[in-house]
Length: 272
Ligand SMILES: Nc1ncnc2c1ncn2[C@@H]1O[C@H](COP(=O)(O)OP(=O)(O)OP(=O)(O)O)[C@@H](O)[C@H]1O
Image (tube, rainbow, N blue to C red; front, side):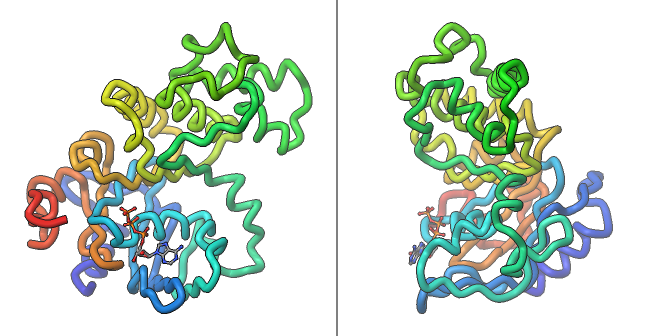
């Protein structure tokens, strides 16, 4: 953990591998989380930087999803969760219960492993968030829906069936619809929890291309079990093990020359 803190200072102040890091959107210091007596996150220090893709990797049960769900406070929905430490979003401590969780979630979208469109039409899925935010003008909603579907590279496939059920789409199309639904409310961050693990290789590629096309506009944190995916799409990678962050660095460094032997062993398939 000392190693991480030392290197984290490098991240905040300087340049690694000739790349200047962007400013942190999330800053996590000494974050601990327990589910009852299970200590799932152990003294985590980690930043998620603006308009970068941060991949979170590690073996099953190491706390990846828990960390992601802490970033939008979804983890609080689990009974008997206890959290300590600090976690700030754009400088504000989001663990402070006086911070309205709805405000946070309006800025932070989430995409899950299994696509979860609403039982509504394609159009209504994407228009749902903007309507909640008070947009009622039909032309405005149509514009937002089209732009969001275009950004999600789905428009051409669905423009002639916008008012049919989202359940009629393939799994890969449903996942891109869920990303379009996030984009429709202009989020600052999208959290993705293994978004392609239920998809075939072609759909996976489309979602990866989509991530690449939006990453200049939105900060992305993505949990993935797929090492190649992390290497392909992320700027930085954090390696979690047993609730701890072993190492977080430029993705090229993590995959070519990691500082910690545990990282090396994991990415080379020697455990996990
Ligand atoms: N709702 C819960 N109640 C109790 N314990 C939980 C709960 N969710 C997760 N845990 C425990 O917390 C630890 C971290 O789980 P988490 O789901 O964050 O790991 P993960 O790295 O995302 O795993 P996977 O890759 O298998 O999804 C595990 O020991 C898990 O059993």
